[in-house]
Length: 150
Image 1: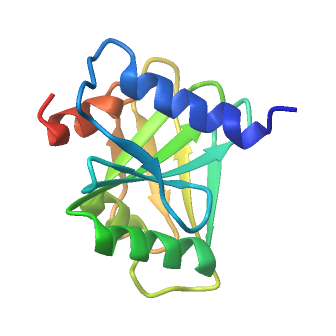
Image 2: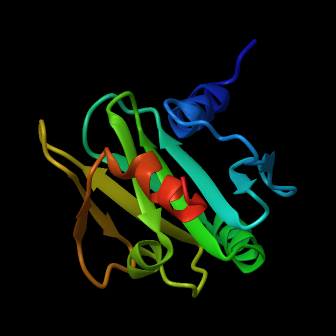
């Protein structure tokens, strides 16, 4: 039986490779947890998903998730949090964007919410939000490809 998490992570990996030759690019699962990936030994991806069909999509980050992210960030030169918003699309946060929504001070549970109107960008807010900002569905995998030099 295919697990729900495999469907959502599969969507991320499919977008990552679709339309690009990733010749020479390595992808491996991060050793701890089940949400992290490392590309070329230096680019980290942490994938979260919300199975909700409609906006807003909520993503909870327990202290365990936040610690896993912190460990993954420390092993990588570049880091992204990838939020799969049901069947709607994907919001990709760079390290600074992520840190403006969730601080490095682990709380019991932090959260990020994404909302979007038709044909607009995702509006992102977080439990430690220093500001709100918008991210386009088309920014993933573009941000990652640029980091990999593709």
